[in-house]
Length: 323
Image 1 (cartoon, helix red, strand yellow):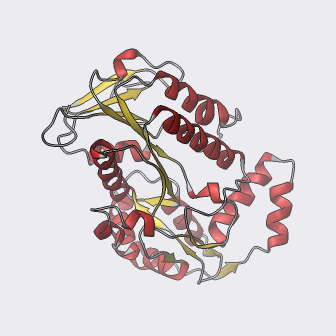
Image 2 (image 1 turned 120 degrees about the vertical axis):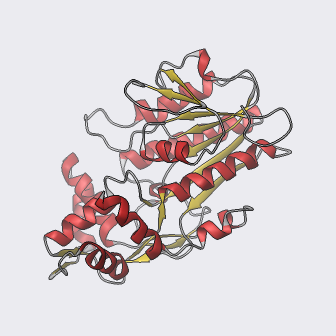
């Protein structure tokens, strides 16, 4: 199971293989074999080189882990509380369970977190050194899982990479583009023209994950790092909506809605879960969410990917959206 050419080879264990990022990781794996933990593997075409193991974070079979060095790609997270049970069982306790099951051949863990750990915006060029001030239950669960991974890695002498993107676009996106398109169809715009956000195509994200996995496999000594992940230049709202209008033939917005801080704070502090979810959605759409990616840009092989124009990436994503 070779991740890099030469040597004894390094395995890859993927959790969250059926999700948006997991599917992109598999598309970008090249010839690298993968062990994938999947709750319901039936009815999918996994392709050669993907060994599917049935299970979940709370029921991990021993067969998931290869008997030689491997890197764990942990993207089995719960991003939305559709069943009302909260996030901790999957995102925190599931991560704790995973860490307790790692074998002696594990070299480290790459984990898909989020920019939400930095707290409410606006954020303009926020770095990884920014204090972690999560305000939503989801963000708090992400901070907790990050802390578990970092401590376990430091104690066990393993590598740890915590990835913090903002918006993912491209193949499989069922949230970012659909939400923007829905607003335009209603001829509405949330937020001013100058609102900016960090984006990255999910397949570029996956390419970066593979580069970081190789780096972890080849590292002389284990490191624990958090990385913001996005194109170096953010996408301005006027560019975002203008590209959709032109590319999809949608109408220009005639109503521009601005959301005052007072309303956001009231919704966030309301006892209603629906009101809190609305506050989170409004904040994402009306406040700038921009990441500084200088740390990731310093990783060999990532500079060209991060230099890609977000407008060009958005235009490419529209092809996938149309299909």
